[in-house]
Length: 113
Length: 117
Image (cartoon, rainbow over all chains, first blue to last red; front, side):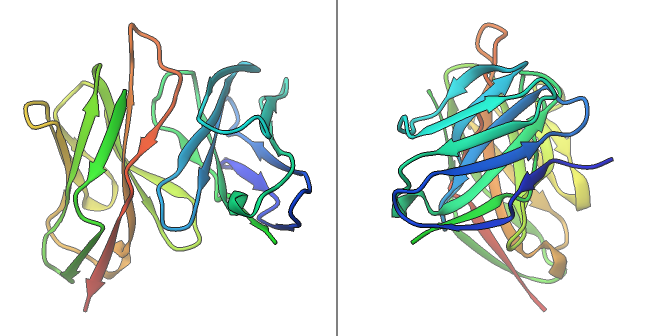
């Protein structure tokens, strides 16, 4: 079985641009969460979606948005990129909205220049 | 509110010696606790999880952790370190409040484990 897949694996953007990151959960998993991991720190919670509804949001500005599609895949969008948005963005999926131990993807490395 | 503190940012051991990575948590409700490992340029892999069953939890690759409510600790141990254990380890807390969890995982700052030959 395929694990959590994220695309692209690496991305370089210029300040002020917009970026879309994509995530496909494990088959049968209905919950998807997004995390930002800045170099040298632990991941920080951005969003959780379950059954296409937003179930939680971390302390991130409105430039960050996300959505979940009927097939449970998800997109994370970031507008007006700042240098500080450079990070590893991790997607995780779980079978249901309770935390049974999320399975993480390998992440998208975003560099803003 | 919930938080987690990993007491050591770096731990260095020799191959074949025991590993101890320390973690303390704070949670207003009954917590779920996890340990994840991250190898360089890789995603996060779940080592083990505690979700209110047995307090001694066994995970993959010989790791185990003991939930001690009185000490609010969830330390990770392994009897004998292997070179392949070198990685960054994260202690993670979540909680169920009134039967509802929004799946937010709160990560510690991480402990980098170095294993010397």
